[in-house]
Amino acid sequence: MFSAVTSTWLGIQEAEQPGLFSKGKRMKVGIIGGGGIVGSSAGFALQLGGIVHEIVIVDANADLADGQALDMLHGTAAIADQVIHAGGYEAIVDADVICITAGLRRKPDESRLALINRNVELFGSILASIKSKGLRSDAIVLVVSNPVDILTHYAEKELGLPKGHVIGLGTLLDTLRFRSLLAMNLKAASTQVSAIIIGEHGDSMVPVWSSASIAGLPLEKYPGYTPQLGADVFQRAKTSGAEMIKKKTGAGFAVGVSIAEVIHAIALDRKRVLPVSTVLTGAYGLRNVAISVPTVVGRRGAEQIIEIDLWPKELQALKRSASVLQETVAATRFG
Image 1 (cartoon, helix red, strand yellow):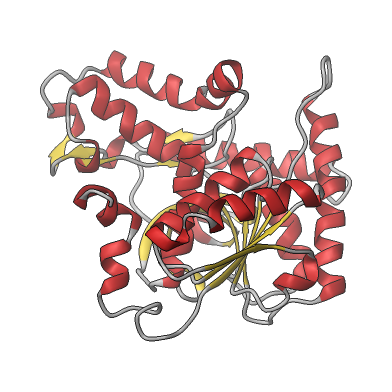
Image 2 (cartoon, one colour):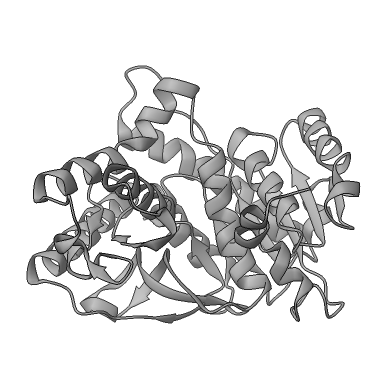
């Protein structure tokens, strides 16, 4: 039913090879906020992947959660033998991965900090509900809700899970946007673009030009590339969230793919290096801040931080990004 290309990136072919799903082990994922555009896109991407065995949709709107789950369930006969249903927090106590996508949108004339504090308050109630019902001691929590770095820090502080078991989606979506837009502008194959964005998922994010390449060729030497083109592409990648809100009320498909990328890396123990957000303990000279840097993601969550050589100005920008986040944490209700 799906093309070979689609099957490959979604992991369907990998599921047919030796892996957790094919060995009879099961991966259960709970999506909190699964009724919304981000949560439902994540659920659909996971369904198409055919790797996750059970998907539970949790949402404050129980009817919406049930409708989304039922809509996906109707397609399982064409994809994989999956269990897809709606439920409350009690339905995810045994989940391998809990993905939190619920969040609030900015009100007219509302300050950024006011929105952050409202989302921190909502997120705190979600964490309290998770803890009240219980979760596995080896569960992995993937934070997608914004501000993702702040909330990832909050979740690590509150849940008491092993190191690496709380991961924020971080700059993975920004990185995928960056690569895709570079490919479009340079008429290159997007899957051959290797470029990464680190730092805050926000205004202070940092493009790593020093290691960017296409098909193994340094980006700066690729036909058609100029520093101005690079700057323009990065600016559009950085503002793509606002562009999506303006044009279609918010991102859905690409963020769903990004979430599936992380969860599939966990399910299949892929050891993928991804720019996800975790609380650092000394890497790049940073401590006590959740921020995105290259991270090995596998069955135990964020398993290893990769410290790459950065240009001095890139390292300086990363540290400045960390300072922005630390200042924001200090100003929030949990800081």
